[in-house]
Every structure is written in structure tokens, then in C-alpha cells.
Image 1 (cartoon, rainbow, N blue to C red):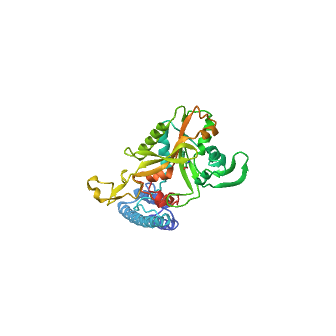
Image 2 (image 1 turned 135 degrees about the vertical axis):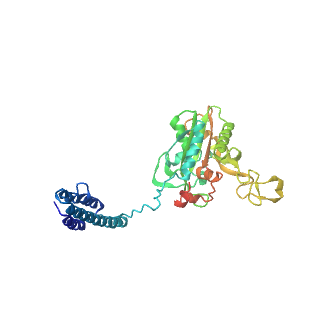
Image 3 (image 1 turned 90 degrees about the vertical axis):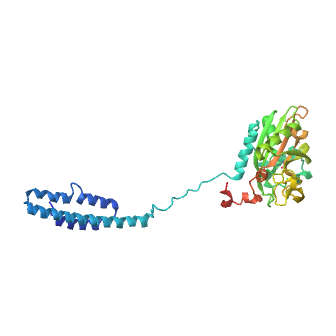
Length: 361
Ligand code: PHE
């Protein structure tokens, strides 16, 4: 059995080799615990006379106090080292984990697919690298036809195919019309193709890779009223109940008749004029009106459409005497930027990869 003085001495020696809170805790129990060294040293008390007992008691208490004090100093020292090494400061605000989000264009694609799926259109995907034949010849644009100039095209540097010609990056989603007709072999067809398209342009409203969504509907007795109804439905679902659409005569080689689709402007509510402060017009004060800068006389252009040309149906293996159909092709980025409240006026911002733009959505 150790005398209290010896116990203090060995404790001080042991303490020197302590480097962690865990081992300090072990040392503390070893000396101050219920069956620890100091309590052990009291066991001899019962053999002592009352005076000697009192002296021993006081001595043990004093040494206990010293050990408690040394342990508390050592603990503080070790705790401050933990702070420095692990930099754990529980008073600091918690770390915020970055959360990713979908790209604005992805949101738009999901919304567009959902709208068309509700009215029975099936979403399809076709090759992004396509043969010229599917992008042009089959769409009633033979080699050297000037209409091909409207679809400035990236060509792939590979040998040309005997029938299908060169390989291209799809300049429009209309090649999907032919792919779908050949895939199904027989109407009815209600297809929506949302895909990447490529043209060598780079300015505020054009980027070299953009997205289009192409609708195709072919069956017996399909006519323009079905086309107008479908486009109206899309416009109201995507832009809002109050928006109107119109078909304006136009020309595409692969549709006849062809149209451009316009939608009423959000800013001037289709009037073509805004108040001087830039708001939609207050008719009571129309002396203050100025021309709306966003649109042309109240209308914004959505994209191209028309009744599928008989030559295109034939190229797709469908008899134009038995079936008719329509198709449209709109730009995803374009319609997304036209959505009220998006407030994006430079298409390039979508693809610059600037996190300050992307993380807002
Ligand atoms: N492919 C045309 C374009 O990119 C759009 C279009 C699609 C027009 C379908 C008519 C029918 O401009």
C-alpha cells in the first residue's frame, strides 16, 4: 500500500507522459476512483489511533485536492490543443452543404414533355448525329436546294454514304419525323421529339447547340384545326391561360401549307403598346402609350409548323392519299426565355456555366 505522499509523487510522474484526454481520464480513475490508490491508502486507518487517523485523513484530503487541481489544469491544456488541431469550435455556425439543382433548360424540357404526354404524345429520341438524307432529302430538300441554307449545318468529316449522304449534327429535330414514320410503319402517330440541335451561330439569341421540340401527328383526316388546338393547349399550359396564338403563313419545304406560330406578347398583353413606364397599357390613358420593344405589334414568334408535305409522308413510307398530318418545331431555350418572369435576355448565359446564374434556379 502506498503512502499518500508517495501516491502524489507517482501521480506527478505519470501525469508527465499523458498526451490525450482519454489517458488522463484513466489516470484520474486510477488515483481518485472508488478503488483508486488514494482510497486504498485510507485502508490502514482502521489500525490507527484517533489522532493518527485524523492526520492521515487530512493528508489524504490535501493530496486529493492537489491531484484534482493538476488534472483540471491538464484537461484544459489538452482541450485547447484539440481546438488547435481539429479546429472544432462548437460556437461557429454550421457548414452549409451546397445543393445542386437542375439546369433551367432541363426544367423546361420536363415541363414540355409533361404537357404533351397529357394529350397522348409519346416522347421519342433519335440520333443526334444524323445522315443528311434524314435531315434534308427526306424532308423534301434535295441536294443543292437553296432551302438547305436556312439550316446552316455542322458536317462530320467522314466518307459519305451512298444513299444517306454525309453525316451531320442534327440542324433541326425534323429528321425525327422520318425516323418515327419508318419506325412505326403505320399511323396513328403522336410523337414529341425533344433534342439537341446544332447551327454555327453565337449571339444574344443564338447558341451553336440548342434544343428543339418537334411534334408530329399523323392519322386519317388530321387537319389544321387539330394543329391549332394542340398549339393553343401548349401555349396556355406553358405560358398562361390568357395567352392567344395565331398561325401566320410562311414557307418550309417539308410542310404545305406552312406557318409560323405567334403568341400574344406578355409585356404589352398583345396590344403592341405599353405605357410610358413600360407596363401593359392602361386604356384610360392611351395618350401615354409607346411601342412595345419586346414584340412585333403584340405578337412574339414561337416557331414553325404546317401540314406534313406529301413528299415527306412518302419518304417515311406513308401513303399521302390515305393519311394526313401536321408537325411543328419550336426552340426550347426560346420558349423558356419567353416565359413570364424568367427575365433572361441573353441565351448565352444559359451555357456560360456561370454558377451565379445557374444556382438561382
Ligand atoms: N424544322 C423547322 C426549323 O428548325 C421547324 C419546323 C418543324 C417547321 C416542323 C415546320 C414543321 O426551323
